Image (cartoon, rainbow, N blue to C red; front, side):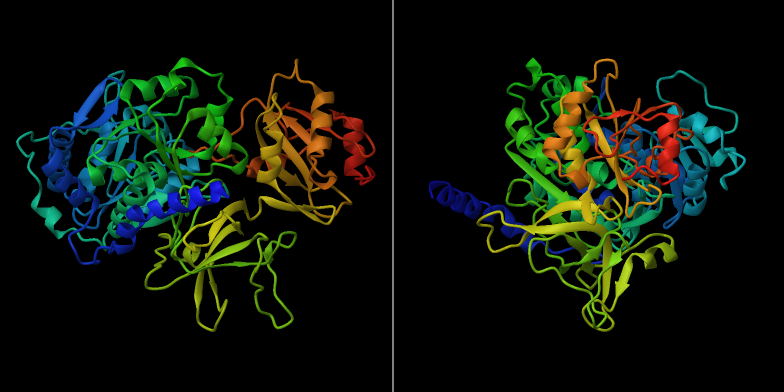
Length: 602
């Protein structure tokens, strides 16, 4: 009873932060509201305060603004106008931020390309952006040079090279961005007065987990409102805070929830090219980072590390991000003593988002969006319908496909590809003529205790990441969470694979481990004790390194395709739990042939 009373008063205390959020009015589409305007307003207040920490560099707000103005003037002189597109292809570093601000000050559109892309996916993103110029980092010169003959930006004067560590000279096929920079042009630009909230600020590409990256449209209004709200009710960020940001700035989590949030309040931020679990806590202490923008996989990596002195009494008190799974939540919060975890949910292209505003445990929180959960047939990969052909709404805590109603207060901007945008819309769901955004995710409602009467939700799985086996639905994430608890497993990637003469998909897991020391009998016993028979992986693939997207999401497509097929797994060892046996054994060619002939008896 005491806990309930204490929780009641704690939640009531959250109202002082939530009420300003409820009163917040989104900028009018024709108003002068943009990332550039927000940055310039912050510069007026915090000009000489530190903004960016990067390796051995420190940039104040004023220095960053002047550099962005100088670059914007150069771009303008070279013909870039309001509405033009510019590719930005660079790792996290101050020049990325300066370029991003320069583009926005002109009312141009930044096409933010995933730095891990090469070959055809890179060509696709550049060419479909219809950009006039490409600003790229020295560190990515090779990736770009490999596709020069295939991209539609052909002039060397439009391929702007940005030096990194002075290791190489500007290639002949590009131009040094420092050329023709007029250092006297450091004042704010007149053109920024024409930039409005309704203008598109960025193209942010989907991570490509399930195919070719698609460009999601990010208007200024979404950038400003999203970053403002996350500072008010998410972090509770102030100008005294410093944020640790190692997420890629080409993605919405690192950019909107990270960098842009800092800009809204004049906070500083430490940015890093790539995440490193071993150096994380030392950097947290060095830069006194009080806030952390995360994805769940980073939290899991950190939890795998042996305890270190730097993590004790660390300054991180608040964190915002997505993908912190329930199996890790309490462990992470308690080990690292994080006071506030604001899990959010919402895809780059989505028309709404969830936020854990009340700092509850193991939840993506609540939403103002009109959302409904509908029964989903996992085996057939489609929504279920009743005898009248109507979708079946979930009324209990069972998982269901989340649909968000599209309307004036939940605008769906979609992608640059109209056909791809249309595929995410489901019509006539509740009444004729209505339009709903298909999240592609299974969510469920949950009881979190006193929550101001607001329904809270929990992420369950991606559609397609749930498979059916032995007439039961299996959640890949839930199975992975359990397998990750075995001390010799380093991050399990679970998926379903087709087996001849068997209904549904058999469970399979890929992970890295020290194969020489791996205790298969203990692991087999662990699996049998912790998972119901239908959820126990049939196959195990020992893989040197799990492939992830730029935002650390585990890729599954190639693993599904390669499955347990000995001629496709690139020499990796495959283990199998044969019917009637209790232990995993290595899959040899003889038993593989039995499986393929449909005689394995699964």
